[in-house]
Image (cartoon, rainbow, N blue to C red; front, side, top):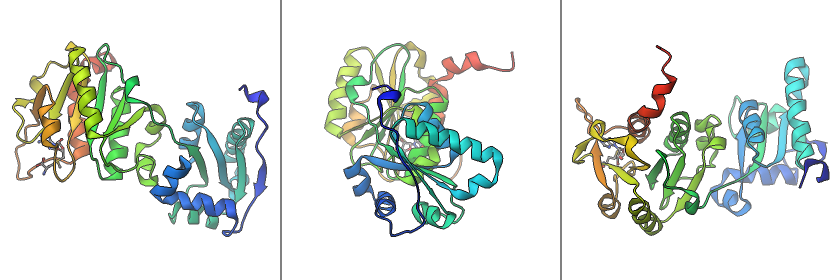
Length: 289
Ligand code: SAM
C-alpha cells in the first residue's frame, strides 16, 4: 500500500504511567511479550531514523516534550513524527519520567519507538559469491549478540543465523549494542537440526562452514576465505560448539593466543574471524593508498 493510501496515525499527549498503551509498551521489556506481540523497543534519534530509513515498521513513536525546547531537535523529531504518522504509526508526546519508566534507564533517550520484529527465512540465505554469514550456537549474552550484529554489518557479512535457544536480538540491551546495525542485518532463527540440514546443503553447493574451536586444527589466518561463500560458526559462551555442530564444519579454526586467558570473549573472537574472512573485501577501502 502506498503511504498516501494509509490512514495517518494519531498524535496524543500522555503523561500517566497507568495509560493502557504505555503499560503495553512497558510490557515489551519481557521476552515473552515481545515474542507474542512481535514488537520491540529502540531508543534514540539515530536508531529510530535508521529504522525508518530501512523500511522497518514503526508502530509508535514516543518522545519527550522537552525536545520542543531546542529548535534543531524539534525539527528532527517533527520529521520523524511526520514519517511515522504517514506510514500509519501513532505519536505519543510525553515527559522524561515516563520515558525513563519505559526504558528503565536513568539517562533515558528522549525518543523511543515501538517497532515490528523481522526475521528472515533460512532459505533466503544464499550460497553465492564470496558471501559471509555468521552463525551463533546458543548465544546467551545480549551485549555479545548486539556487538556481533554491529561487527557483522561493519565488515560486510550478509547476516546472522541464530542456532538453538539464544538470547533475543530484540531485547533492549541487544538493540542498544547494535547501534543501528540491527536494521541493516538480516537475522534468521533455526534449531540445531535445521542448521545441520542447511549446512549440508550449503556445503554441497560449494560453500564452506568454518567453525571456531579452542581445539581447532587450523590457524584461522591460514584459511582461504576468498574462494567462495562461507558461514563462520561460533560457539556458546560457556560451552563452545556442540559436537554435532563441530562435526558439520568443513574446517575447525583456532585463533592463536599467547597469554594466560583460556579463551577470547565470543564477540571479540567473532570480530577477529570476520576481519580475516572479509579481508579481501576490506582491501578496496584501504585509505593508505
Ligand atoms: N569454554 C568454552 C570452550 O571450551 O569452547 C569457551 C567458549 S569461548 C568463550 C566462546 C566461543 O568463542 C568459542 O566457542 C569459539 O567460537 C570462540 N573462541 C573464543 N576464543 C577462541 C579461540 N582462541 N580460538 C577459536 N575460537 C575461539
